[in-house]
Image: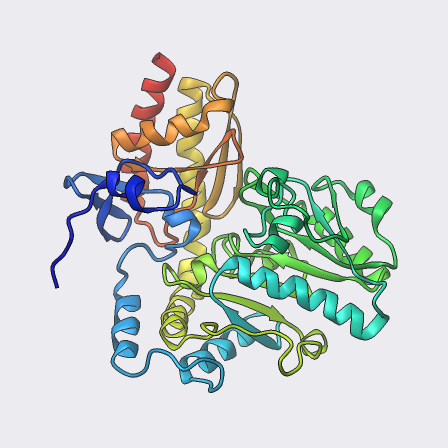
Length: 404
């Protein structure tokens, strides 16, 4: 078999144009460093959009993958497998949940969560209790159902008619929620930290009040922790940081550390509504994916790693504040753990993507969130020297941006 030589231009020739990727084509990664086709090195503060929680090619993950690759890859859910059972057991032991459903992505985990919320209400209260309340600027995936629950119309326009029975209210606005929640509400869906919406954390007071309102109206509280989960907040899941327990939780991204997997976690009471044949996934619970995710969970769910996340948050914040003291480009620095947003001031707020390109030129990979915020979602075990080096490179990029 011959290996075809490919470049960035190959993308424009053969890929559906849903993305506009950087001109950089990474070919190798180790820890929090990445090298492209030209041999250039980058410090990775992007983490594959909050996915590579243990960095690139972590030896624990490589070992888990190669060992499982020599055993069994796939069975489908006609049969179960040992890695799936071990991973589910560990997730149950580590969280509020009693039951787990495995999927392939965050969108699929959320699709399962939203379907389960409606099915639970149907089974226990009747078909009229079907309304879902979500929040403006939220993001829950790219399926038709999840873009409809997501509070950003730009992802939904052109794909209508969208599923009905969904209402959006402003995030962290308790009075707005009180005005619309009713006995017809089957679920309130929220991200503990809005990711794509701009790295906006829910206040603890708001989250607690949402929990109380859900209880009052027999509605389920669904936490989308696809981006905020698996140690990124400094706790295994962000609900633990804010002290509010959901009825359903979705996880993906960092769960697989780069191998595609999603999970929906819930209680025995709620899980009962997903009886035999009510939902499914051919690849969900794949043995390779679950073996890798088990190794990720074991590595992340240790005090030294979780405490390190909080310490590294402080290093990022200090460095960003020092940059801002020099160049005055940030309106606000916010977030939790190693999910950090730096909102840009005018006139840069409408051109956040330019900072990604400037950073790449200086050898640092960053992200945007919303249209006006720089997002940092690096490995949870990123060495402190990589944080310092990456921030030095970012400062050079910002200095060039403000001098233009």
